[in-house]
Image (cartoon, each protein chain N blue to C red):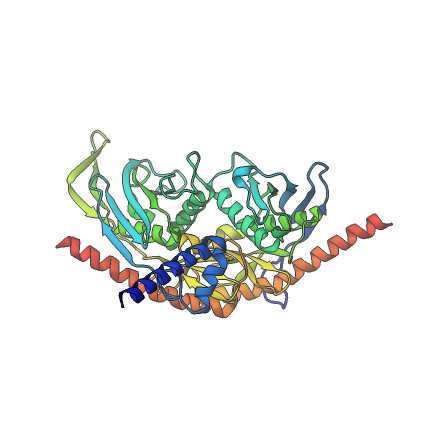
Length: 292
Length: 221
């Protein structure tokens, strides 16, 4: 009996080694053999997101902050506010300045030096989302027309990269903005200088709630949701859909790769709508729990 | 020029293209859509830096130069879109461990710049004689405040619009390779815009064909 147990043990051990070897030798075939059976190497279904965890307000020195994990991908977002003079062409608006940083710490493929294309493209993507969805009305950031307004620096930093950066960044940004509290500022009529009252703080109104859902396409036929870094590098195309609470598209970002048919796109839209519900519920739940 | 979309074929501005106009690159093209103009040059297949080498295919690098100043974050995002679209069309597995470089110089921007970049890129890749599985073209559409979809908008129309979409469409199945959108759109509007872009792509591919056949009929004489 004991002998047989030992025998099974080595057998299983061998299989694991075989699987590891298979993955190293031919990663694409390895992934495809899972996808054929409608599952993925980490045990997920094709339309299943990894566990999303959210920590709102971990940085006390920032005006607002959030730490989001989707699987292993970890993103931290901090909001810093500064006072400035409004832009001359739109004197009744403030500024929102997003930046996505991928330090060498987050993945071995990132080298130190100037930011990689992926980080820069992500920054531009987040800037477009802020602009498009009007997540915050820029008019709300104006304190006094032509004189004073807020600048919100939204610094998003990827601490661990395991795919699906864009979705994680959007959740982090949304949660951090919901957590942001700005002090009350008035302009002294006599001295014409701003006076900041640090004791009176109020949160900013978050106008829209965009939520992203990323998909990876394998061989034009199989679409999987929330790809890991491995899956992203093997997929023939990746796509990110961002929708708001009314179900309108804020962005359909597909930077290239193989084509996707209309019906597949429709399926992805459906998944994105349910994802929006899941994330809104999560954000509300966490905000509720930190109030207590 | 009236650019509104009512007829069967969506309106586009006048196209213009010249291939092989630069002597140093392996392939070059300039593409003009109305007043928007982009110059593209392709180098390769050439030797690749070891750090960028990919063992089973060629490494494609896209560099986008704005008309004024240094390339910024916006150019990086566009480079990514153009690069991944070209990678989908190119048969880069035929040139493993080599480098391909595509340089796009903005000459003038009067709307639909990303679409024009894609068109210039495709013509330059064709001129360089690189093996491709299909051709592609870029089309920009905007939705104006009345909800009308306008293809190939000017800069003025882009500014007055409430949503802007750029698609890359392949020549074989007329499917969407790349999509980049700005502004809030409903699903129906998106599908209308895709359908309209697919129609407009026929015209661009016809123009490609005409332009290449004109060029080769000249050289054969």
